[in-house]
Length: 125
Image (cartoon, rainbow, N blue to C red):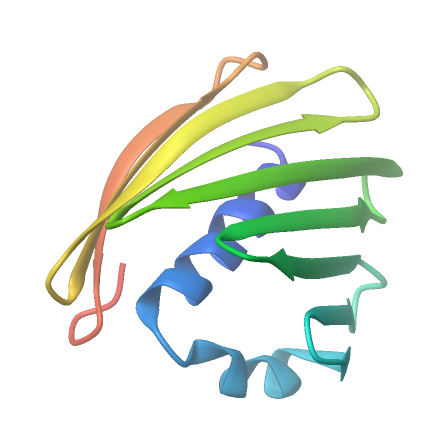
């Protein structure tokens, strides 16, 4: 799985788990406004999260692969669908479903990656 896909899915999981953004400063240097969070990590990867209603727009740059990526997450109750594309043409789709304190996550990409995993506030992913 490509790093951009890992970062975008990980970002989505952090958002779905709850108030996890409080942990991000330990992982990356971030700037925040009312609806925008922009971060750069120690490896030089950068990403931003913009919130508009129940839709999240993620954009990022993967330093190792030298590629840009964008992802849109749309929330409908306990279900969040996401789609993304990278500058090298890779595309991905998936969803996250909240069930109590647990999230069920599934995605697949045009690069051949796919996965289904479950995350919990208590046990993690």
